Structures are given as structure tokens and as C-alpha cells.
Amino acid sequence: MNISFTTASLKEDANRIIELLNNNIGMKSKDRFDWMYINNKMGSPHVILAIDEDSHNTIGMVSLFPLTINNFKNIWLAGDYFVKKEFRSLFVAMGLQKYLLVFVRNIKGTIITFPNSKSEPIIKRVGYDKLYESQRYVKLINYNKHVTQLTNKPLSKIITPIINVYFRIRSCEFLSRNIREHTANLSDFFDDRYIELLNKINVKYKRTRNIELLNWKYFDNPFIQNKLYTILNNGIIIGCIIYYQSENDIVIREVVVNSENRRKLYDCFITDMRKNKIEKIVYYSGNDDEEHKQLVSCDFKIRKPLGNYYYCSYADNAEFIKQNILVSASDDDM
Image (cartoon, rainbow, N blue to C red; front, side):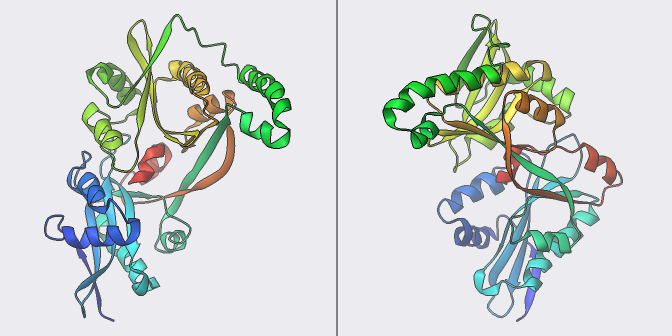
């Protein structure tokens, strides 16, 4: 078997990329290609293809997506790592990664990746180092279902309200929420009202966020119907949460707020989601100590980790990047 590795052209090799996406993610592969590859607001992806020279068929790919985080240059997220089932071998899988690392080495860049259990051994073997675990935080906010499973229905109607109130008091949600001062609204996009908040967040956390990028990332997404929850104080936006609903659960994608308002935002969000009969809130977070403390204080529990982030850096300040880089929970989508 004669295999070659080459850099793809998003225009000329579009059909090859879409075919591989279709083989691995199925429906909406063309939508994903348009969203992530052609209309990517963070920049143009870099794609490596594995070609079977005998048949001229594309048998594998791996993509690098530019990330705008921490104001570091040449930060890439490796994703869409696929090899056709009939060609899956260590040679093809490692060849794609090695070709990708050559590209990043030449530009003195840094790669971050979040491999699944099958690709993690390959990632470690070609030279990636563990960055940190992706923590899974869960907060039960309505115990109706759990109590009903343990008791009969008439008894659960008596017990459940007591249990719900107890856990609400335990997480101290009453302390920072003042309904007269804070109002909340839901929307499906960011507008100019968020500019001031984003500018503050970008300066404090050294992130590059703007309205166009956030609307593309969350509300142009063809796979997830995200919502935007915002709290205001005297008409001024002080924080927001991007999330989606899966049955009776809420999954938080990203939190945009200053540290002094983070607890207020969480308390308002939890209270309003409880009113909507949501059972639990799930949030995947990286290595953010401040966020961890706030989530634990709100009675979020750490469950089984989702997996590990890995990185490989050829930058002159590689160690500094390792200590300071912070990946958003929603960056895994890419």
C-alpha cells in the first residue's frame, strides 16, 4: 500500500474533505465544512490528507483550527482526525500526526488537542504532553425524578419540595441574588450591547472575543441550538452564559463575566433554570482555579472527567504558554 500525505486546498479538495466528514459524522457534513472550514471567523484551517496512491482515494485527514485565546500567536486546535475503517493502521494514523507536527514546527506554533480513547495512545506516542483534565461539573437543581424513583408518587410529592429547598439553601443562592437589581433575558445572538462587557473580559483574561466571532461560533453552529442567557444591573449587561438544553438537562458552553459578578450570574441562572423544571446543569471546564472555586461554592459536584487535553509546542515561550493557556469548554467542538 502506497500512502502519501499532503496539505489540502479547501477549494480544490473540498469534496475529499466532505466525503471524510460524511463517513465519520454523517448528516450535515457539508454544513460543518461550510461553518468550520470556509466561514471560520478565527482564520483558515490547515488540513492534512492521507492519499492512497494506488486508487487516488482519500483515506484519512486531520485538521488544525486556529484559536484566538490568551493573545498567543500560532495556537491551533487539532480536530477532525479521521482514518477510513478499512485503512486504519498505526502507519496512517501516526503519519497524519507527524506531517501535522512538521507544519507546526516550521511556524513555531502550538497545538492543543482533545483526543478520544482510541486516538489518545497515538497522540502520546508522537510526542504530545498532557496539559490538564477536562473537569465535568454537575449540579442537580430539581430532585423530583430521583425522589420518585426511591419512593412512591404520593410520598415524593411531599418530600421533593423539602429536598429542593434544602439544597437551594445549602448552595447559598439567596445571598447574592437581588431580583430588584438584576434582570435576566434570553436571546439567540450577541449584539452591540455586549461590546463593553467583551472588552473588559478580553483585557482581564487576555482573550480575543468579539460579537462576530461569538455569533459564528455559537449561533451559526449547524449542530447545536445554543441560547444566550444575560443578566443586567440597571440596564447594563454584567454577564452572560451560552448554553443548550438536552431533554431536561442544561449544558453550559461558555461563561462571559468578570470575577466580581460570576457568583451573581451563576445564582441567577440556576434560579431561573429551576423555574423551568430543569433537572441538572452540566459544565465542562479546564484548568481555571477561580471558576472551580465558584462552581464548588454553588454546590456543583465534580463527576467523572471527560478526558485529557494534550499539547505540543515549538514556540520560543512554550513553557509560558503551557502555564497560562486556558481552553474554553466549547473549543472541543472544533
